[in-house]
Image (cartoon, rainbow, N blue to C red):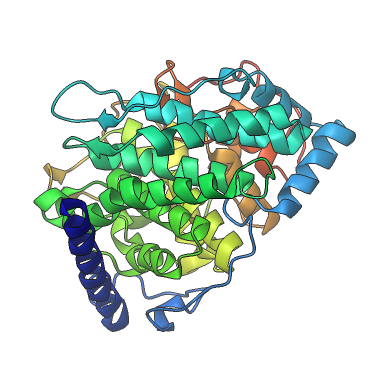
Length: 438
């Protein structure tokens, strides 16, 4: 009875909050009007609740993507796809013998942090799914499904004051793994449905509620690296579950949300590059905080944009005169060479969490997270100038997974394999020597 009452309360709460979000989207008042320049999509004028038809798989990767990558790496054995595949094949999380370690409760904040357990298994589920697509070896498929089935069966809750960081940073990984594996004949349909329900019951409410109330704080006290993972995971779960409402919630927040995940709040200011290598770039909401967190945001913007493009054909990469690229370029330039801090224009800004940030915080400068191959290749194909993103991707090639010191799996990675597209620029088919580490 208690469970039924709780579900009834959550349903009513979801309906209420989603209604509020849709109203805000319709009247377009919850973000400032700082960006009024060209917009490449008309999503701001869409009805608040469009319904989509999804052609699966359509999250970070499509069937056409896998056909292309298999041909390049497995048949033609062409670089840099081959080095990207070798990087994947040797990952300890991409082995057929991988065994999951699910727990009934995962906690982060207010005590011991065991969130790396669910993060590591999520990364493994994704990497094993990629290996199945590359090799057609069912042992990889079974290993990936074993992880997802076990977590759906055993894990009942994610708790702690930082539960959103667990749900946001892992939910999209599991959803992307499931999206790849959904057409595998060896995945029992009932188990697939139970897995989707696990994401909806355990992961989604944490992300959804956080965007609505930010743990009881005002929206300006939350960082972009808290909002963005929540948005990415809601979007991924919506696509996986053919749930247009969840997709719309994520999109509405990108355009009209109250927090830093709203693109109008993600960017403090746009600047000219003093070195003239790019025309403009954009200072993000976390550059005055530290670089360990600032470098989290470019790949999550890229994941969000890539999934929206593949699933519903909306190109957020070009939104507002490619503001996403500008944000990535600013972050990349400052962190491109560890220990070498370039001249950067900067606008002081106020954070509800910490007050005024008057300078770029160099703490963690040079942090090399994965994810730059997606950013670089997308804009390369469009004929744009991803100058600093190109250099960042080359410094890490071939790109591996998001593991850092064995405990962190914030980013999916393996972009050299999955996102490289022709034409290949000079030097793009060569490994970085030495390859930059995270």
